[in-house]
Image 1: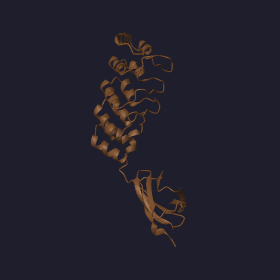
Image 2 (image 1 turned 180 degrees about the horizontal axis):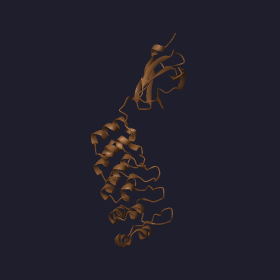
Image 3 (image 1 turned 90 degrees about the horizontal axis):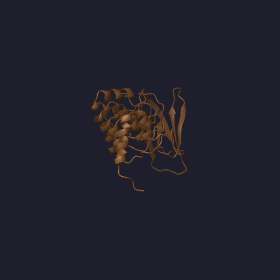
Image 4 (image 1 turned 90 degrees about the vertical axis):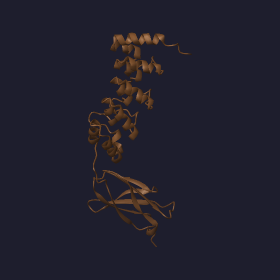
Length: 257
């Protein structure tokens, strides 16, 4: 006798432009039995997507705005046929999000992220994430919004390995630097060249930022991959900066040993 009535019709838990998350359950589960999920392809052939004990599966590499036919069964049940489709739009892309950030359309940004949360961490053709894009605009209000929506404050860029904090430091955006630190930005990361936070601060030529990180206790003797400390790098960047930097260190209270 078939147990088809005990197999609950799968639900579409989530749908995206190119993927569907399916979930299902069975009223009476036998440990030794496995679910088998199949999809009907363009040649009217049933292709197995999954076989196992899980009750959720993500079907990937689908076309947008398409309805697909699936079927599922346990070893003791008949096939249960059902349909599900990919997201019908609007289709937001990284370009749409970057444009909304540039135009400061906060409502549209929230709408885009609600539909495509993954866009928060996707880099554009200039290899910048939306958060870094806002930082380059020195837009503290936008940075705050993106962090609130879920941007990773410590996600490094793919090619430079610079974190959002490093980008803010490099451009001398002191208010943004303090804001990111207060929001939990990491202080011990290094970029692809082995430069730490204090090295990058020195390279920026901004004494206020250098002083800020020294006061936070960052290691003034830390070396980059060429063996240069922040002090040595300062001499290569700006003579006046190194004078101010040395004076500042001279007046610091001695560290306890």
